[in-house]
Length: 356
Ligand SMILES: *Cc1c(COP(=O)(O)O)cnc(C)c1O
Image (cartoon, rainbow, N blue to C red; front, side, top):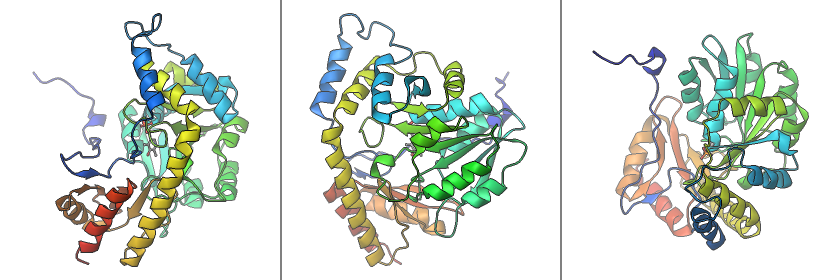
């Protein structure tokens, strides 16, 4: 006898993690290419053996100290903040909290590859609205795509994988068009690298509009991808719903300790973010010089809309010992994370050698 698995999972695209190839440079998962800060490593070591909250104990389910620190950072009241096992877990919780079979979850495409997966897991329907020719989210078309079945909308800015941002005025006009019962998620996973001067203030929207939630993560700018810490800022009613569908104790005690230490080390991290932005600007200019189409990115990666040549480019880069992320389909391209300067040089050498 064969175990019965829900049919909603049959056509589910299995999540493809960024590949690691021994000896190769990994520019596939938008990680921060700097060593862990000593203060963060120390906090993790201390938490492991802490007298009253060491790893023989369950972690604080509400992550109270971390929530207090996040309230100080964001200016949002503690009642508006909830942590998650990476912000991708919060994406899944948002769908679970709002949508079921027959309901629609709306997002741009391309956008974060987890959105269709977490949507399909619940049995809800994913509605993809194509990005513009300039690889930007098409907010007007997204507003037009709202139906009576729409329950949740993801707006990723800067958008993974295209790197583009939405403008504040456009987002506000969009939010004004969304019915009050539809939840809008502003996914700001890359906000620390966003140097556009007209980007929206997702935190302000999330604290003033009951149907807006803003997601942030410590995986990218804070260098904690391996520990899985994300958070949401939202109306307390949404926070309560997110807690109801959370896996108990999802944020482990080492992650909580590391996150607190990393938030306390912003002064040491900010120069790293500036270096990523400077390298991104350099890589972008070099690729344009080589003749590639590259939209302006405000994140820690660049997007090459190579379409049907995406897989070929990724294989070529791998031969040059550089692992990039290819999305090989009709709207496809290659996403390349910004690494250390010598890593970016290796990627640019591979890009220069790609036959065009
Ligand atoms: C990386 C990423 C996340 C979440 O990452 P976590 O590691 O789960 O916190 C969320 N949204 C986007 C768009 C991302 O690129």
